[in-house]
Image 1 (cartoon, rainbow, N blue to C red):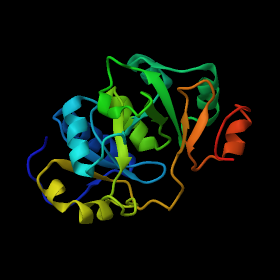
Image 2 (cartoon, rainbow, N blue to C red):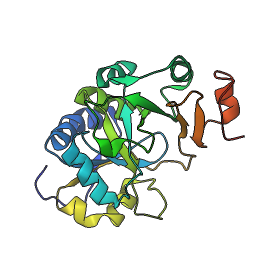
Image 3 (tube, rainbow, N blue to C red):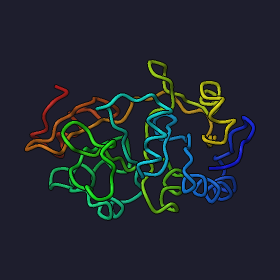
Image 4 (cartoon, rainbow, N blue to C red):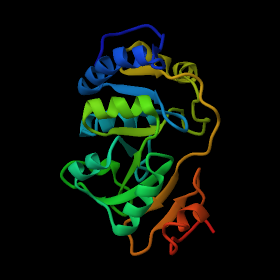
Length: 225
């Protein structure tokens, strides 16, 4: 983790800012720290996928058992390296809607992903983010980032770096949390979450992509009307 710092976020908007920030952000993650970053929907919190970093994220969010985080990836190859299993149906959804606001819950990755990142059925939630700067950061890191909304429990998800800092000033000041400022995001629906661990794909959280859109690819999709 970095040393104690002030409350200013790190610019993460222009190409030059992104180029200059990525090495610093990677060093922070590899040192055990957490990031706040912009995505295609809201600001998120995340870090490395090791047990210690996941535990720190649990503490930051005061996350109850049984409510896991998701993983953000920057390529389908990254999913393969983790050992996550794509079925034919989930592969078709990914080919049509990734990168984008679609989260797939997949089986596998027992050797790479801590148990705290698994849902009640044993699956791991994954999304290929469409945010260009975040894609570059994850690709440069070479591993997924964990992801959860950047907010306190029962509070709205942050849409700007300043909202994150206002809610978590101590964590930012201590150097535990590095805030990447990608500008203010427009309000948008969350990603649609599809469980791919059973015999039929099932929508378990409606979101930016409607079930009707998903059924153009997987007609027997279950859930969300």
